[in-house]
Image (cartoon, rainbow, N blue to C red; front, side, top):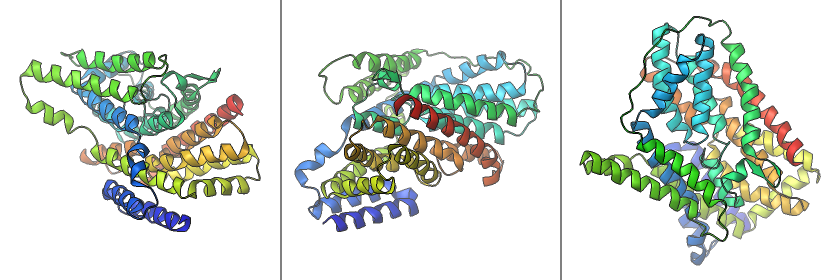
Length: 422
């Protein structure tokens, strides 16, 4: 049965790579086959799905849609641009701003927020927006790993390892992923400053975006605040974080519909939720439970231990850099969802705490997507925006920034995690 499960899982992954537009249906179809073949008992299907993760993603996406509509991100970007001395610092400041937003908001949504401001700045200063948008995209992807709600991969880790919002800042009396990511961001900022070193033109005042509704901003702050408060509650329901995110989105939606007296807004904002990602994850949760039930996860973990010769440093290095390479070409969501139980298995075999390897996995898988234009959804979104504006982006254009940005950030994170957690 283990060989059958492994073959089915391998086929699933190949199909996910080849038919990217149908990933959700492939994952769901594979999940059904796992159940029909008896690899995973029907009684375990509901429990295999992490409902807390799915609700967190859905609720956060809905609140982000309201936040974008309020135009608050554009106002914040305008304020930042007023404070910088020249174009070089304007581009770096926009990238850092995108990173800050992305620590609490989905990466793709962040690019959609900040890109219009970057385009406006580029047109006013008569410079190409290509490198500017690329910088914003890679910075967004970098900071997604900084907090529990910053990216789907972070939410997956939080759900699997039972980590709360504050654990990403400080965990077991040691620095968490937030500080690891900030070290990476610091090193990659020097890369951007060097890349744009010749753009020293001054910036004229551009005016400020008007924000008429601050309620979505309060919702965003409320989401973060309640997740922090929930982290102090003992013996809470497993879906607490998901319920918080969904309830706050519902409050924002009700308020928006009431204020504008337009029930059509319900459909509009519900459509902003990425149901394809939710279905993909739901199917993958079942598939991964199936290969775990069949013993595949344990076998892969043993293979890692064997290749690494039982040396935790070698295994840690292998996980980080293999994740970087793989995530440059494949979506990191199914990859991280698959590897989390493998990493847990490796830790059990070695008799060590798993968090060194968890954080290494997240660092490699999240930052590795910045190596290529297809490695992360934020990158694809940024390139799509540029194409709509009539700008072509070659792979080399992207990699001129992506490669040094990624290597500087990953090396900093790789060293920091080992120093903090070895």
